[in-house]
Length: 81
Image 1 (spheres, rainbow, N blue to C red):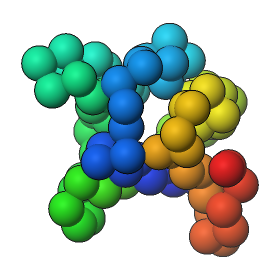
Image 2 (image 1 turned 30 degrees about the vertical axis):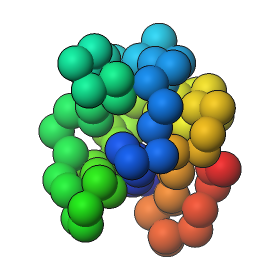
Image 3 (image 1 turned 90 degrees about the horizontal axis):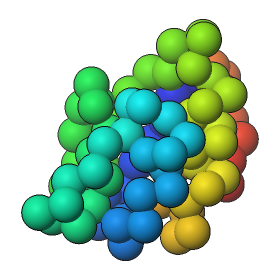
Image 4 (image 1 turned 180 degrees about the vertical axis):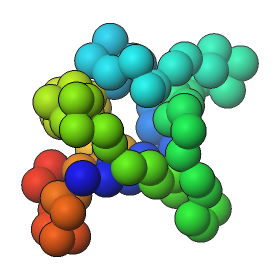
């Protein structure tokens, strides 16, 4: 499973931070940060989700009020949103 985070879309509600510890607050920028991610294009960050964190990653994606977080299964099918 992998997660994609669009930092440009993020509005800094930090609900993802409450759901999964891979997200951190960047109060200076007013945006969340996805730790251990790779920037694939300007403002888009991607990382693999460990098996023991899949539920947390899904909750983080569902909690985002602006759908800045997407979760994909191992076959590349988008699960959330």
